Length: 343
Image (cartoon, rainbow, N blue to C red; front, side, top):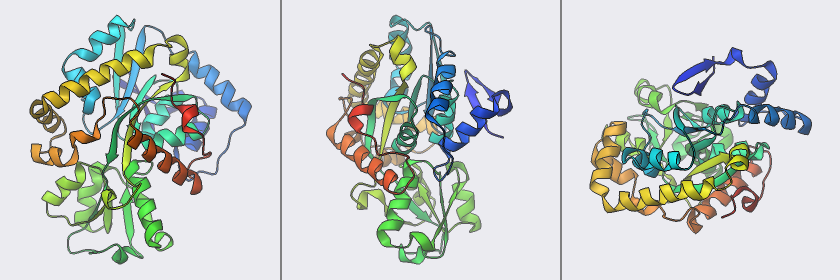
């Protein structure tokens, strides 16, 4: 059963209407053939808008720990986040962790999240479906994905032909894997299944899958555990990921200056993080349970910008959006300029 994170707990799916259940399923499955009429989208968005309250800011993030990482997590760790947001008029701030981007999308669709921190692929897919989100910041760009194989398994991309591969579908790793298989001309001869990062190591050990497209930190960690790495997105132009922050149109209608205030918080956190990198890397490592040296490899500070929309990040977003649209994984190839919140 699917579930939606709300506040600090969960609400079961059967508490939502059947229309919502159908709509959520259509949005989140990248290969779906479902479609909705414009009037249905309008009716649903109006219903979702009624849920939000001015005094509470509901933030969702993707992660493996209940504590967020990156500039946003550092802002929270340093006490900057809540203090500034409360001064901006938000009495309460709730934070909800999601296992992956599609799950976070689910909560946005349900009207339970105002701000989402997630990867480029799920964010683009949701926007392309017609849901009213706005891009308010790129938090990290050139994020690496790694192709990890089972021990004594495939030693090259060509060896993957006819094999079963896995990744977290709807993630930037998924986009990388699809792009890689297309680039090598073996997409039709391989099978890609959905598997969350928490299950990857055991699946590789059992030999259930030949390879796993892992995230920026999980890849180096699995390599340290003896699993071969045969490729990475860094070896392919345009296949690395981007981490973004989106906000709902409903929030921005009520708080038009929110992006500016929120970006000031994140920019301050980036500056402090870079100035205290040793302290930050220790926090990051303790939060997700990987050694500091793994975090340093997977999270170079050059990937963080003090500007909301670094040019390299925008270039990667455009490439990802175009690819997803060309593969019919995104319903439309919308203009980035129409998505980016005006400064």
